[in-house]
Image 1 (cartoon, rainbow, N blue to C red):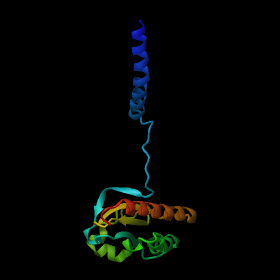
Image 2 (image 1 turned 60 degrees about the horizontal axis):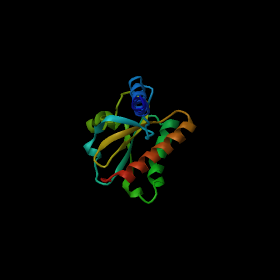
Image 3 (image 1 turned 180 degrees about the vertical axis):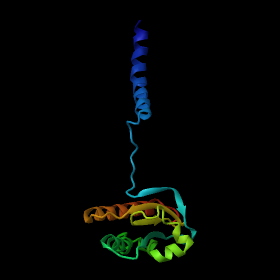
Image 4 (image 1 turned 60 degrees about the vertical axis):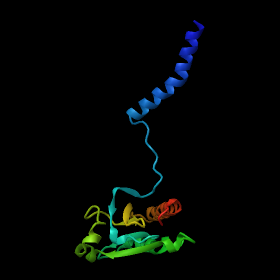
Length: 163
């Protein structure tokens, strides 16, 4: 009888957590954490014309009429490479004119959803556009978005072996 109780106790100690984890996953009670601030593009957009070994690219498609969001995005494109610090030679900002996007097939690849909000895209040194950062309308959210973009970029540059 004592052996049976010990077996049941061991089964409860080791089996119940496994059963609870299985239930949590099956019922979607657990949401995996995301550590990036931008929207991950899956699959990444391949833009080989952006590839340059060792260079990370911040890409922005400037609309014909530049409003406050556009000005904020242009400011971020200029300032974020400088904010990276000693590694700033590994980052470059690219501003594409909206008119050139419609006439230039490679640049059109960056328009994920035609007519979507303005976005800044992050491309790796291999020419893969991997993250999208929609530029918010509110100034406070734009500041937070810029900080998030900088954090993502620094983390990627630290972990990257290609650039």
